[in-house]
Image (cartoon, rainbow, N blue to C red; front, side, top):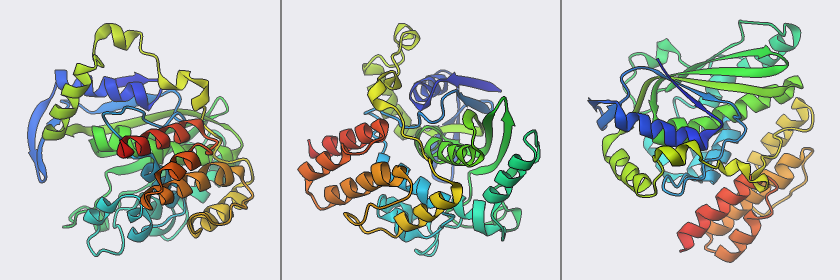
Length: 333
């Protein structure tokens, strides 16, 4: 078992790509050649709320990752909402309507009860509980399924220790570039923060256990070359790497300041909101973070680029505001 200890997604991403380049086996998969690390890998995030990846060469879409996470927390599986932010999501739907393996739907609806709510109640009643297990893999519908969308993350364990919520996520097959240090870290860390704030405690450590820790060869080689040209893997540079989150302007904005019940109402209201619409919410997270990001995306899609850049800067979460600005600006240029 290999362990990657990192402050957050930014240094974890570089360390992971460096490890795979040094040590890997080449395998054929159903969608092309992959380079897989020889053993399972555990990534340990000390500051999981620092969840935004700023690496320009990776070019992660912050709008998609943010909105998909909220969609998950609402327990939804409809394609229409997330497709607004990433047209390629249609490739993962068998019927063009729903997503079979949608994590949020598995958390709240698939097993006919709200697992998140049950876990919050358990941890409130039994702070030292060791049975707070959130299930995503359903062998009845997943094990022999012939379809394009099967959950990669399979189960999550939560426990409270020293007044902090720790979380361990198990993953059967983890694409390092698009999954581990792309979408997964945002989805899961927002879930962790949501539960922690519902409990009235702080976020602890996030452990991501990846059984098949891999990259697709054609994507990796091109990306690794570009990063190497920037001396991203130089030993001296790594030891003295200045994490983007050292910049106080990138400080994350708290996910929840009101009660869980009020926040949930805001969430469902926000997901029904029209761009440039009402910004009246109980929790300032939606007013000051979610609405500006939604509006900036809409203005960008309307090719109102100057207005989009201006709007995204009104987002009160410095990390999302900066990542959103840079992502739009790269496309304008």
